[in-house]
Every structure is written in structure tokens, then in C-alpha cells.
Amino acid sequence: MRNPIIFAAAASLALLTGCTDAATSKREAGNWVNEVDLIKFEVPGMPPEMKESMTQMMASAGNNNFCLTAEEAAKSDLESLLDSSGGNAGECTWTKKEVKGANVDVVGSCAQNGQKADLAMTGTLESKRSDITITTKAKLPDGNEMEMVMRVKSKHTGACQAGSENSAAVG
Image (cartoon, rainbow, N blue to C red; front, side, top):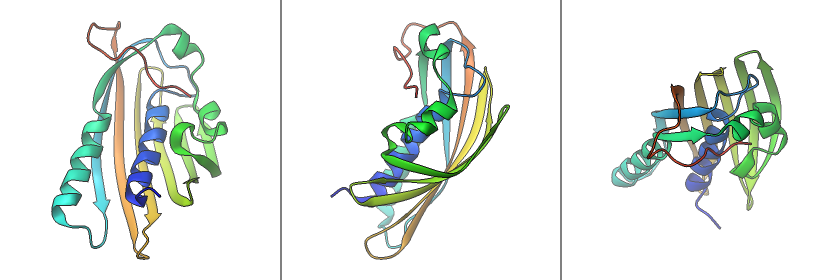
């Protein structure tokens, strides 16, 4: 069985990746830059060196350039991602799915291999930029609860560039 902290982090990143690449207003094709700020990462009883390692892993996992092709942009939207159980986040259920124009307010939970992570996502998604805050909470085997809050900002920077990832992960 996977470590619940790793699962919660993976669920957040899966949702994060889908959300920064998808929106109700279609994303514009071209080069995009993601910036991830880890605002909060609390795990009771975790050794400081392990917490620092996880913090660095989470922060570096989302900071990237990627090329969103015209085909990917045409089929990317947040509601489809949510309806497909959150992409790679496992089986997800959503208790709140408010996607109105550029404003997003989503709450739910994802489960995988007997582990569960509660997720909340608020912010804005537009055709050339996004600013989303994702809060993830998960119960640890010792009964304590871990909490992670990340802010993900994405922006369109023009035509696809050499050296950017070949494509984005879209829902």
C-alpha cells in the first residue's frame, strides 16, 4: 500500500495538472508556463528532513514549460476532467462543482487503493492565464491529518518553443 502522504500529493498534482491545462473557456494553444507555490505543508510527526524533501519535490514538480497543441486546446475543459473522476487522481467524487465563467470552486475527495484525500480548488481559469489554489487533506495511518495548500499560476507565453515539453496532460 502506498504512503498516504505520497497519494495525497499525487492526487493534488494530478488535479493541478489537469486544471492548469483545462478550463471552461478553451485554453489558447501555444507555450505555457506553470509556477507552483507550496503555501502550507503540515504533517504531524514528520521528521524535518523528510518534510523538506517532500516540500522540494512538490514545488519542483509543477514548475515547467509545456506546449499545448491546437488539438489538445480544442478538447480541454475542466468539467470533462472532473466528470472523468479527476484524471490520474483515482476515483473522485465532487460535492461542489461550481465553474462559472472564469471562476472555479470545486470540493471533493479522491480514493485509490483504500486511501482517501479531500481536495478543494478555488480560483480563476482563463484562455491565457490561471490562478488556482488547491487544498489537500488526508488522514495518516497514525490518525493525524496532513494538509497541503498549493497555489498554481499558469500563463500563455506565445508560440510553442523548442525545449518545452511536447504536450500538456489534459482531461
